[in-house]
Amino acid sequence: MTEISERYVEQFTTTIETLRRRVIAYYDGIFYLGRKVEKAAERLKEVAEPAAYDARDYVNQSLAENSPLEVIDTETKNSLVEMYLGISVILIGLAGGQLSGAYALTPLIQYVFDTSVVSLILAALPVYIYYSIRKNSSLDDTERRSILFSSTLFFGIFSGYLFGPRMLSLAPTTIFLPPFMFALLFDNGILPTPLVSLNRQSFFIAFASISVFITTFLASIVLGSFSIVISLFNIVHVTGLYIHFQVIMQFVKDKNFLVGESQAIYIGVSILSQFIFTMVLGYNPEATKK
Image (cartoon, rainbow, N blue to C red; front, side):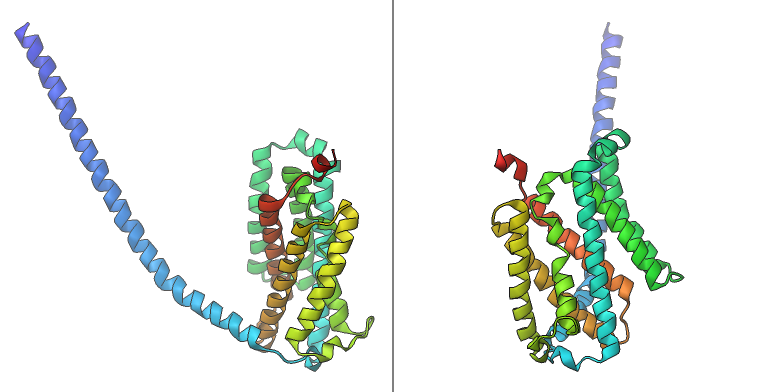
C-alpha cells in the first residue's frame, strides 16, 4: 500500500509540475506574441503614418482648388461627364439589384444559397472588383465598366436579399440622381445654367441644395412619407461627390486619372455609406405601414 501511495503521489507531483511548466510556457508565449505584435504595429505605424499624412495633404490640396468649372478644358469635361453618367448607370444597377434581391429573387436565393454563403459572396465581390480593375492592365475602360456594373448588380441582389426591406428604407432607387444631376449641370449643354461660372464651392453649395431637395422629394414619394434619414444620406452622398470630384481633378492635373478606378472608388464609398446608414438608421417600411 505504501508503494502504491508513493506512486500516486509521484504521478500527482509529476502532473502538477508538467502543468506548471506548460502554464509558464503559455505565459511566455503570450508575451512573445505580444512583443511580435507590438513590433509589427510599430512598423505598420512607421509606414502608414507618413502615407496617411501624404493622403491628407493631397486631399487638402485638392479641396483648396476653387476655380470655376467653366475653365476646365472640353476634353477633360467630357471625360468627367461620361464618368459620372456611367456612375449613375452603375448605381441604377445597384438599386435594381437590391429591389430584386429583397423581393423577386428572394425564393430563388433562399433555395440555392445559405445566408453564410451570401455573406461570403458579398465579402469576395470587392476583392474580385479590385483585382479585375486594378491588377488586370489588359482591360480597357469599357471592359472595366462592364465588370463594375455586373459586379455591382450582383452585390445589390445579394445585399438586398440579406438586409431586405431595411435597406430599401433608404430609397435606393434615387441613389443615382446626385451624380446624374451633377453631370447634367457640369456639362451645361442640355441644361444651361449660370452655375458653372461660379467658383467651385458656390457651385457645389447650389448643386447640393438642388440635389438633396429633389432626391429627398422623390424618395418621399417612393416611401410615402418624408424621411430625415434619407435627407442626411443624400447630404453625405453629395459631400462625398464633392470630395471625389476635387480629388479626381487633382489626379487629372497629375496625369494619374483612370476612369475605371475612379468609378470603383465612388461606387465603393457609396455602398459603404449606404450600409452604415442601413445598419444604424435603417428600418422596415412595411412594418411601419402596418
